[in-house]
Amino acid sequence: MAAPQRRTVLITGEGSHQLTAQEVGQFYRYGLKPMIFVLNNHGYLIERLLCKHGEIEYNDVASWNYQQLPAALGRENWFTARSPPAASWIKPSPMPKSVKRGPISKS
Ligand SMILES: Cc1ncc(C[n+]2csc(CCOP(=O)(O)OP(=O)(O)O)c2C)c(N)n1
Image: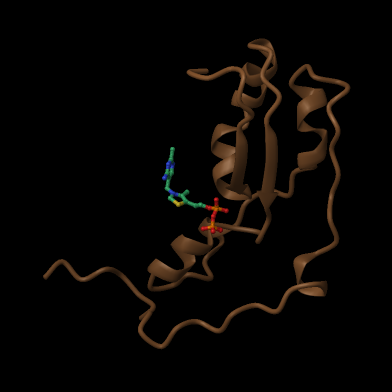
């Protein structure tokens, strides 16, 4: 909004996008043309890593058709595409040994 001549590039997790997706409607209302990349790892990964029981379903999210959101929010002609699952084209990094899973210590 501060620089409408510049293009916003938004790279977001699907969990975060589900909390803020209505703003896609605001983008087009103000004539902005963002590029939005939704990285979908099927849940709140950061919360899984921080929780003692990260596998609990609280950290799952509903499967949305993210590429249909612009149309649902009013912008019919925006280009959208869905890539193949990342597992088919990138190798996940192993968890660094320094990262311990579980609740954050208050001390
Ligand atoms: C409005 C709001 N609600 C809840 C949270 C708590 N929160 C922090 S990270 C996160 C999950 C993010 O998930 P995602 O964007 O898919 O990223 P990932 O952890 O999978 O990399 C949530 C729900 C928040 N930061 N803001």
